[in-house]
Image (cartoon, rainbow, N blue to C red):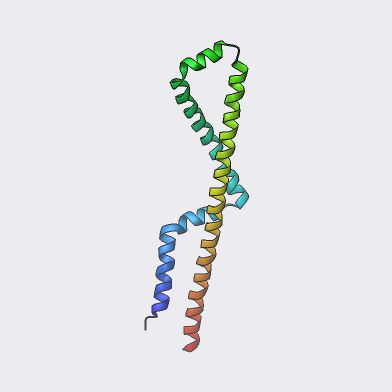
Length: 133
């Protein structure tokens, strides 16, 4: 006879494995510090490129003002200001990256624990059925 509860559990397990299981397993294949470090390095490079693009657009839009500052006496102040903006941008970007990927790792860990718990319940169900025979 078909056990409806067991069919429901197997369906939920299969659905999870098909949708989020592969991504969670890939995340969980790393140690937390390794996963976060890798994502932080990628974000550092992406953030630097983003800042360069944003600064490039700003420089094109305000080209005449920048030329006046470059040819004037404010070159050191301009470079200091750009570096300061870069540091603020990259620190905020990395902080946001850390928060997002920390919670993704934690969520993947919780999902994997729930999956193992569901496997355990399913096995208990099979063992209980075997014990009744």
